[in-house]
Amino acid sequence: MDLATILKPAAVKVIGKTSSKKRLFMDLGDIAASAYGLNAGEVVDALLERESLGPTGVGNGVALPHARLAELEKVVGVFVRLENPVDFDSVDRQPVDLVFGLFAPKEAGVEHLKALALVSRTMRDSSICAKLRANSDPATLHAILTEGPASRAA
Image (cartoon, rainbow, N blue to C red; front, side):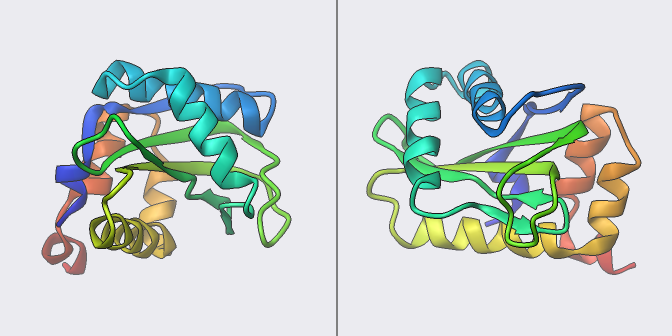
């Protein structure tokens, strides 16, 4: 599994301003609807339900909101770079500007966990995060996220 199989170029966006975590989830729902044909309202509801269990802001300006959706057949992702960070109740109490939303089928089991681990490893890489923060073009952001581990090592 790699991020290129999870993340479509159409699911990568830069958002100038968002007012809250809930508004950000609505943006993620809209992007997921546009890129994958998902129901935006169901995406938002699933994200809010998951977030009620504990915040998915992992620190260093990164959030990994995720949810399971009945209408999905495979794991898919949405990436957003926020030009203005938003409060996310992160573990380090810092606002987030890099958000990778991950959506899995209800019965995904281990595939969901593998995808979440892959996204988490990628977003913990400080050099990748620095590149993401330095770029505003969605195609460039997609390329940074989906380049393989071999090319990252060079």
